[in-house]
Amino acid sequence: MPDFTAVEQAVQEAIARGAMPGAALAFGQGNAALFCKAFGRASLRPQQAPVEERTLFDLASLTKVLATGLLAMKLWEEGLLDLDAPLAACLPGHFPPDKAGLSLRLLLAHAAGLPAHVPFYRDRPPEPADPRAQRQEIFRSVRQTPLAYPPGTQTRYSDLGFILIGELLELLAGDRLDRLCAARLFAPLGLGDTFFVHLDDPLPGARRPAEIALSIVAQVIQALHAGAET
Image 1 (cartoon, helix red, strand yellow):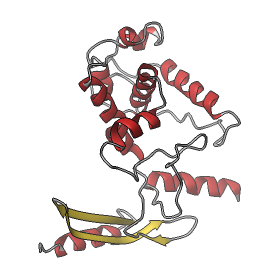
Image 2: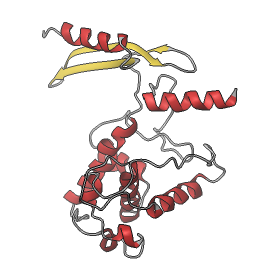
Image 3: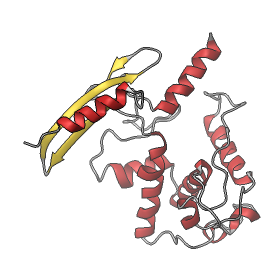
């Protein structure tokens, strides 16, 4: 049996210096589990709770890589996408002139000229009366956001680029992103605990369990909401 003492010490040290509140690690070889252990806390607010082996983690921005990016690659593999075609060729008339010439390759590489982040959540209710309408409004806002630099001249990590990709994939494949990922990625891989959490119309397996561990960003947002309510 391999010795994972050094790994355990590294995780404990990271928790002690505040790099993360907690973690869960598992190592395996073939079908055999070699190591599985939980460390630290799963949440900081509204109450502290320990990480357990069954704790689910909010993957936050890893969704770009593990959902939207992989789905784009899957559709490319199936011959449904051309990574170098301009967006105007994929969906004629849907994108404004400054976005029409962008390619999926540029968007996937964070080199399409879009700004890193725009706080679209401001001045919008966290639980709107019509979530679908608000979702479409945000898609329109992303399409209308001016470019921050000439496409292809630099690489700048961008949330907006992947929102554009997600909208494109939904329109081309004819379904919502979470359903597409569940059917084409997560189910074939046997990832029963990988899902999108929605405030409206969730998939049957998309639940918000009490033991979910929020990302640091999510915990900060949660704390800000709590502060606004007090």
